Image 1: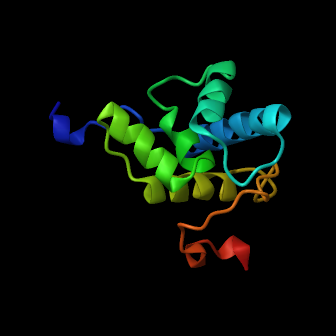
Image 2: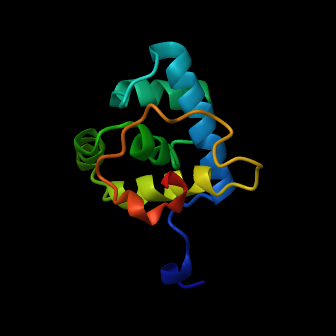
Length: 124
């Protein structure tokens, strides 16, 4: 198989993104309270407590860290990940899940300053 057609090692299905956002988000609130953003260390610990595989942990960082913290984390490891695109995908996964409501869990305290929220009609 051509390496151009292989998914990125950190690729996640939308339902897995939704499940990860819920588990890590619930954990962060339980341990640190509701905050607009969490530190890299706090998100890393929440990932570990929830047994989030290291290959997909960056999705949690995209949702719960600041843009600057996310970029600094990835620069330190030599990885290049797109914070805005990943955050948008995480938000879309929790907003368009196959459940009855657009959020089965509360992430409303989070701020999303780096996104053009007009992409998401559920904010209307």
